[in-house]
Figure 1 (tube, helix red, strand yellow):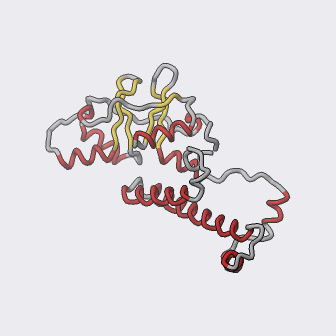
Figure 2: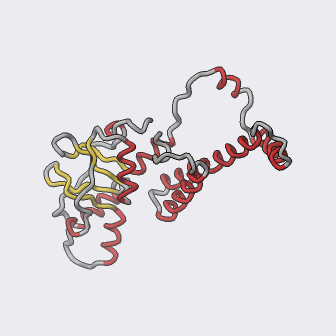
Figure 3: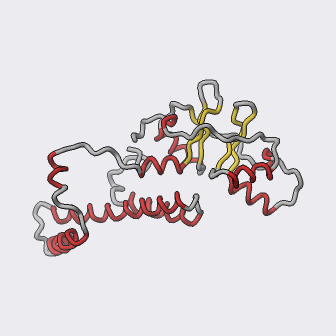
Length: 229
């Protein structure tokens, strides 16, 4: 996956939708029947809003209004992206606007798909094809099992503490070890978040893990969304 890949390559389709005149109970039935968290609200093929499962459930719990309709609680205007828009731009729009889904539209502004934060994270977590190199072949002879890593890390700490590290090899190893651990925390939190169906507490844990990971190269980091470079 690349940041400049079009969202059409990763969007979900066909898309379940709902009419703004449908009832909240109708929306709840769709959310409970299907494993989704967002519903584009459409008139014809045009997106007029977005409805989330969380907003729908909260409204239902707090209101006893009979025949309440979707247009009462849908988020409008809907932020959407063209099908040729990049994943990077889609991720930026979600982050800036604090949303978790983007309807994808064609040249005529008609709904053709939907892309969510879950889709983006699944893309980021998918392993990239490995390019065969001589270095890779040599590294396979030295698997990074903890029993092999621990002595190297301990020796690196001694070298750094005694300043017997003229080429900063030990310091580089320790820094890379910290980065790997922080990224492992991100992957672990992201997988828990995906498996739990976007739980709010796991969302916060994932955000904290990403923040810790980003601090390691804060001085040189260019603005980008993690995993989409």
